Image (cartoon, rainbow, N blue to C red; front, side, top):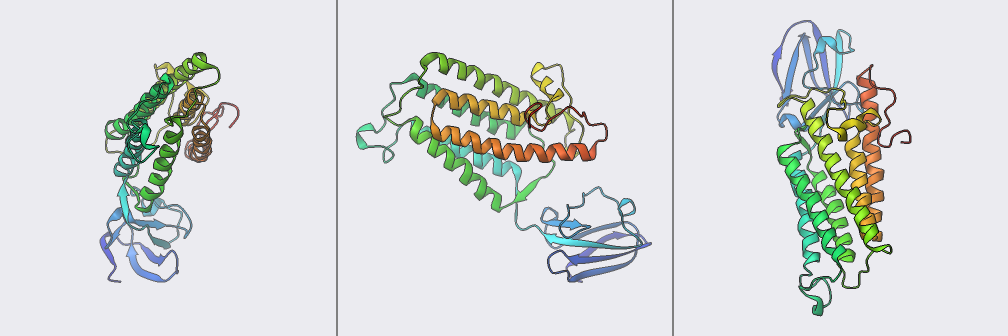
Length: 306
């Protein structure tokens, strides 16, 4: 069909391309051995699968190595408009940084007019602002200089979903933490100092894990390897956990919750924990499936528990 452009083919297989949703035949290719094909859409928007509801085939997959007979059937799915991971991350992390600072400086229209551009008398409010800003500045810098993405793009709709989540929670938390009637934690300085230690410890740990994961993948490659502890003590948690970046992330937000003793912050931490657990379990299953020698003692996110 005119929607399929064959770039290279070598004789031996019969290949049928069906629409993953409607099962309509899009194309039939006779006497091919090695197949490279693309549709009119850019490659990141395309998904070719062996099963309509299965996973997309990788770019490096070879026809001869796939579990198909001499007549192979593939399913095409349009993934919709795409956007780069970097763009999504920069957008979803910049919002919370700016929004929180707006509440911290109490710009007009947020609280009562008499509180416009006033500052809180509680030092924990200023500390919380520094910690929140540090966290999202760290994320922005890691996006630009540390992370190496296995996939270049994600569906465009994700940017709206992600921004709603991060921006919405940031505004909700900031409103109460910076509110003129906010009261400090019940156990005072001892609780705040302990929370700060937990927060900073986990931020350093999270960064250490990101560096370790970055070093596993050479620039420009999609190579996947089993992550192991390095000389950095913060990476030794790899002995017990598959996704310690999420473990440290959870710990950092637990510290922030303890520091502010604010219900919206606690709720954000809980929701984040649930979501990160889903991601961690998925990555853990992927590791077990891909690597037969994967360390059996590891848990997805919490050692020996979850």
